[in-house]
Image (cartoon, rainbow over all chains, first blue to last red; front, side, top):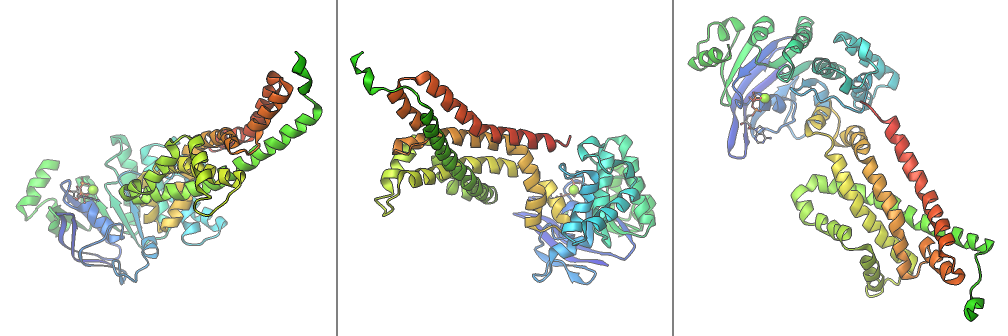
Length: 240
Length: 220
Ligand SMILES: Nc1ncnc2c1ncn2[C@@H]1O[C@H](COP(=O)(O)OP(=O)(O)OP(=O)(O)O)[C@@H](O)[C@H]1O
Ligand SMILES: [Mg+2]
């Protein structure tokens, strides 16, 4: 379970998160929608300690993420993250991209790490690209590589930050299909997305972010199709 | 030409003299390049993490080493060391100056190499649970090395040639040895060709090795 409790965060004078409360249950898929600059990415970064918080708490499987005693590197292996830009490691082949962290972070043997990598690349449909360098692959393939790389750490949670926003339209589908597959397998995920249709399909709940707060939170049938908040309605009218 | 008797032509034993001097050039260059590269990596890393503060302090010092002509640095430091109580021989003084000169050049190269990895890529590495040092070792280092190896080779080859300036301190390296022989034999053409060949032989491994590494590291 991920518990975000009263989290506040400022960059200088700009308060980006103004008291966020959100609980992600095991196996739950939560989509986060909202305007640019509303703090969606910042919240994800705070969940795996890539950003600090000013007040509040984030607890992941009982571990207080921002406590001084927390080993953030260990914590991050439990929370996979995929970004808008795929961030492949350009000097490593697809297989090596995925095998690196299991070997050096989890301490697996080279053989085990390669085995894990191969399995995860098969999982995302890249088994024919094992020895290819990322620069030879499409954005959609590299994004699936990034997903496999995160999955190789066997995380309990996955965070997705607008993973299809930088893709050519014809490549969006293959990445969303991969996310659907993970959701079907029961992965707990927070998915920041502008793909409203996708959010409706896969989410258990949808959170609408507005200016650093969660303006509305509920099942897709409520938030996306029958929003209570005026703000939510306005936002949805604009993205459609 | 009555005075021709004080000159003696180029002899086979002179080749040994030149080879010995080439050995000294090799020694001082190898020391400067290896220690200077090591220090340059550390300095470049410090510059890249301290940014503004680093630029205003270490960056300025390194700029001095990079911009003041090496020959002036050599003479200044050679005369300065005894004042602060280090009576260094020409070899030691020359080595120290060359090391810092090299490290200043390498620091700029290393800094560029570190910036070859986008911060987003480094954040992705950290998101997998890599420590700061693992990110540096497994992501930033190999990407940076591939990006700046040609520049580093340029620095190394430059230092090899610049090491000739240590001769102003009286250290008999390859260039100084050739001057001595030219004065004696009055055969500048032959001797300069031989000395040029020696420099080429010393440089050749550096340029070949880096060219080979570049080829094996191609990934796109
Ligand atoms: N490192 C930073 N330093 C300063 N300001 C930042 C930093 N990161 C984000 N911000 C600011 O915080 C605000 C929220 O940014 P954030 O990236 O969380 O928004 P977002 O909801 O993800 O937007 P988008 O849909 O454009 O990705 C923005 O105004 C942004 O400019
Ligand atoms: Mg964002």
